[in-house]
Image 1 (cartoon, rainbow, N blue to C red):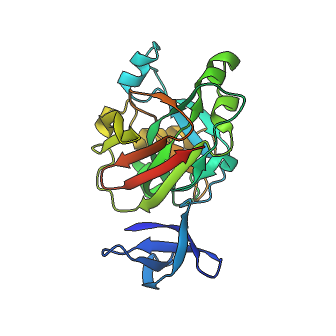
Image 2 (image 1 turned 180 degrees about the vertical axis):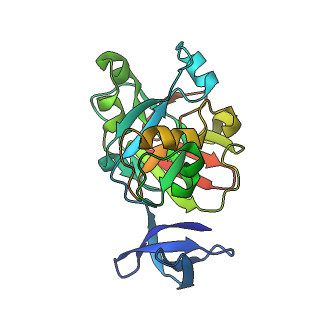
Amino acid sequence: MKIGRALRSDGAAVWAALGQDGTTLAYDPATGTSGAELSITRLLPPCRPSKIVCLGLNYRDHAQEMGLAIPDEPILFLKPPSSIIGHGDAIVYPDQSHRVDYEAELAVVMARRCRMVSPDEASGCILGYTCLNDVTARDLQAKDGQWTRAKSFDTFAPVGPWIETAIADPHDLDIRLLVNGEVRQSSNTRHLIFSIPEIVSYIAGIMTLEPGDVIATGTPSGIGPLNRGDVVRVEIQDIGVLENRVV
């Protein structure tokens, strides 16, 4: 099932589900059931996380293109909740940067509070999966020597459009990114260095994960720059398409 959040025609933000015929339906997260058709004006980011935990260098080919060693354990950084935007929202190119890059990523959305779990227990903590673009000011990342400013600008975390709750194997999904219709990244999640259960367990051993928190699992090779006016599109098999324009 694909679930998320939407703005109803009366201005209320509500949970919603995507029907098999493409209609938007009311959704009750307490029961996990969908209901009558909804009249919506637009989709919102599909969750409201307390934090976005991201992995650097979790595809072998991306580590190689960056000239960095394959990590022995996950490399973590955070993006603030204020960086989140939804499908169709604008990515704002900050005046402080002269090189803003795209990074297509599979994102994990947490279902419940999760702390100190084993990899075997981790899957039971996951609500589902969605698309994420880890937009990065690459020049500032190199200049600062750490990643907070480069990763944290408002609008630098497009997420959505839906959370897919019925993915049998998240480790065999095609992932692509296109800019103005041209393929820039193309890979498969089978190339992840650390598996999703390993990632969730590792993070939950450091910080408590809350319901709705997002884990971005890393980007494959092919990262590159965006320009104002570009339309950037993340496509993940069986999950959906996330599209945003750069302004």
